[in-house]
Image (cartoon, rainbow over all chains, first blue to last red; front, top):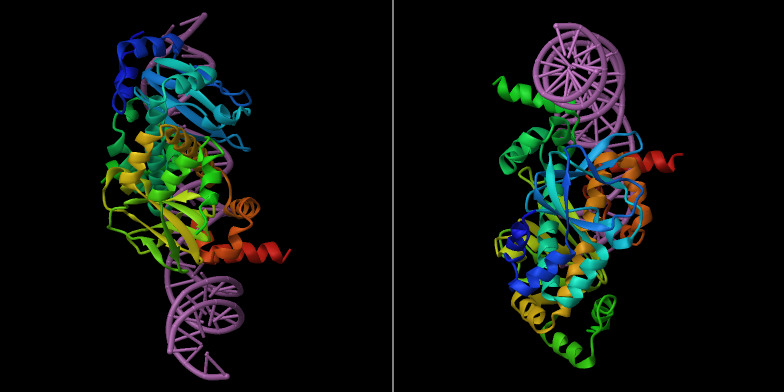
Length: 193
Length: 193
DNA sequence: ACTAAATCTTAACCTGGTTCAAGGTCAACC
DNA sequence: GGTTGACCTTGAACCAGGTTAAGATTTAGT
């Protein structure tokens, strides 16, 4: 499995020489996932941070009524996982699964800590990654509070056109914070006029 | 203005000797804010990351209808600001103001970059800070999607009891994603039974 | 202390979005 | 090639929460 994508990601923010790359590569665990396959399940402690090399994953929360709520999608080039469980080593309240056949690299928690000690510039990389992630989370929060579902769908389609191929509509509805039925209505109105 | 609180925060995750503290202290800009005073305003580029030494600040988004939406409160010991504007150096879409008389330290962007270069362990501090912040953001997102306003208010009261002293109810309503009128209904039902 | 302004509440009515139940579509698999 | 099962759509009844407007209460400025 080709790890060049992950190093390209690192090198957006920090420089790495070949020796460092080799070392980092040695702790990454490559895996292939089939569509629908679970990566993390509710109740288990998340022991890996996950890099998506190809394909698409989704992380979601299942509430008391059994309704799923999508927290995030993760496409090629993105990191994903349950940061709460990973950080605190508590059982995960989220599930993560593949929406399409995918390739991922697992970075086990212990190895991540070790890498951060050995190469402090990785602290910088993840600091920047997380800083940007907060910006996205705030943006989404604001959208949910200030914009109508109709508009949210339009914005989503524009922002992540590639996702609509992979992702069943019901999960897009969930991500947008509405029911699949209501998304259907929105789409109908949209195409009907 | 006493900077010991900010170092206590740093030292939750990294160790600092006296020389380092002195140096860090030398770039922090202390300021006192009166209740209601603006720290950041819409349209201007956010040039400081902000540490709240005492008091309470709030960051909010004003939508096209003129309705405010609270993104976050920040109490003593918290960092705050508009990370989007700060990072990308684009005009801010948020406002930040003091909800009570407050003391803050400003960390100018240039100085923050310099500190991160000079003391790489600060990268670690902020990496951990941001990592935890993402967890909070995801938690809030899930709450907004899966829990009724009534429950959200109860959870909020339990989680941030100290905030209800400082913060006008209308801002709490906004934070919860409801109107002040509806929060009033919830409170009435709650006390009435 | 007085006033003006901001905040909080109440109540009647309205609507974006949900729920429930049924039917339609399509791909996968004996 | 028929059956199964996941997904998407439709429509009607319903509800959580919004809107509007008015009044009650607190806060802040002079």
